[in-house]
Image (cartoon, rainbow, N blue to C red; front, side):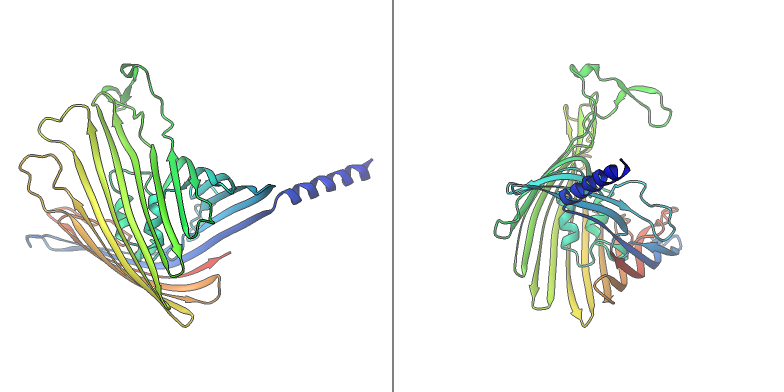
Length: 401
């Protein structure tokens, strides 16, 4: 009897193993020593400048530290199903392990029609920020387009979107590739709208008829179309993210993002470039008295290059962003647009295909109230001081498995 059960269990395990085409455990461990120096100045020279510094052992300076599991099952007839679970980890202090799979958590079905993917995933508009940045948006050298957009108008869907449905074109289209993504907001709606319950005051928690819990915030829709063939790669993306709404005020806030990116190999040298624009707009059922938010644009670009040197790679990039506040709706307002520029230089020395040493330096110069940093502490902004410069250094090691 026992032998029969063991034989049956062995056959069952063998059948399960043959049905499962592949399962992979993968990850990245990236640790770095970083130093930051952020300086604030008084534009009128009345208050002494203040510099705040920090030195830290951090992670994810070259590649983001992570631990993941992915697998594919061949269903036959050209169909396959796949899963991908990827968790962020903080290997510098060990405080974050597999507590969640917030980097990616998807299941998909693919075939000759392409791929349908469900779950939490990167947004189409984020891909251009990282693919066309020679520093890969990591560490002290990451470009300002990503840094500014992740804090722009409370857009939680800029890098990733939860509860998303994605479609990817099949890979056999002569170099063309693309995707569409729709993320559900998963909030309650009421018919008629006047039945919408009042929200709570953000501080006291008291019910406030003038502030309704958002009924559409969190929705995202976007797409990306690209072409990659030989030395040329280019792509365009667009996304619309609902960041806030209020039924009683008759307003809906959204962030609309468009970007274009390209790269080209000239022999061993590779050039990169990206242009991006995001608009924070508020749709009003009735025009606001005395102005009010109409639109605020965030426009930026990055240009860069990589040059291989033996077992190493030299990386350089310059990025720039401008906050266009000329159309805030305030009558007769005269303001200077905040802006910032960043120069980043780095070197990666590959000890093997999976292990590398790296060093990166980034320097940001802010104007007119922009407050972007290379990382570390926040600027001191008291007693007339405004953010001026930020400098950061990373020295680290990256191992992938």
